[in-house]
Image (tube, rainbow, N blue to C red; front, side, top):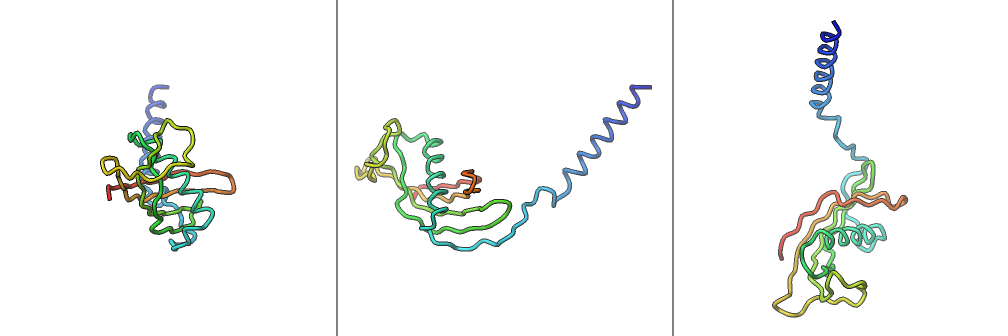
Length: 142
């Protein structure tokens, strides 16, 4: 008798899970303010870009640190967080990853080591809490 109850409970659990997973609006993020171009010199954009570059350099297998040459565009969308869409051109610097400071780094001028990359970052931010997350990153050699 208890086995049939366990079986019924399992069936109900599976049905509820299937119904919940097929609800298309369940996982949709509500956009409170549509995507809007903003000034790249905005303090939150700078924070998000700094965070995105830290993550990029951490994940990169390159021996050198990459730095931003140019911010092409910055956009903001408001959902349950601030979402910054940032397009940048970055380049390999003369600083190796193992070095502690990056303040004296300059863009690589040695033609054998020179490398430029175009990146688009989507950074989710709750800057008042100090929370930043790279939600999406797409980079291609320039």
